Image (cartoon, rainbow, N blue to C red; front, side):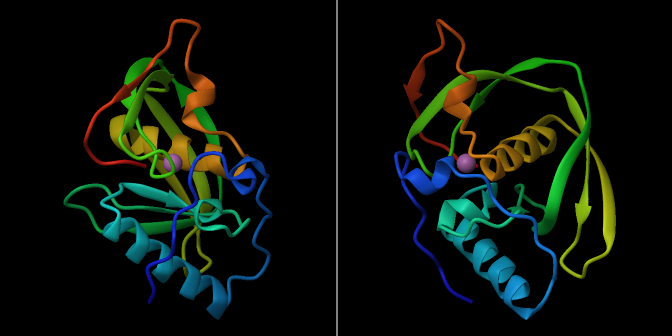
Length: 159
Ligand code: NI
């Protein structure tokens, strides 16, 4: 496993759309392991492959006290509710922005073994899924800042 450099906000790769993974092979397994190690090292709760310069539809999520997991070709199939959250990103360390996210989402994708999974999530897990899937589409949380929305400089864990 390896800790990989995380691209900073402003790098054009972060604005590109990632490609679907067609074959979940050894290189994807290794990518997942490296992403989990990189996320833990950065004290993050989630990481998407484009953040380490790989334009593939792979995300990892590691919420506090929970086993980290990967989702390949993830998609949000249902969103409900709306709430205001403070959100950060490992590509923009030390900042938070107040944005709106769903209260709950249903996501589907494949796990690291290629098995289809469907996940109902609320609160922080729902927020993290939306944040990481946004990365796969070249979208960053700052894009969701409202007219009066501001960025704050705050410490804490990032996505
Ligand atoms: Ni992020």
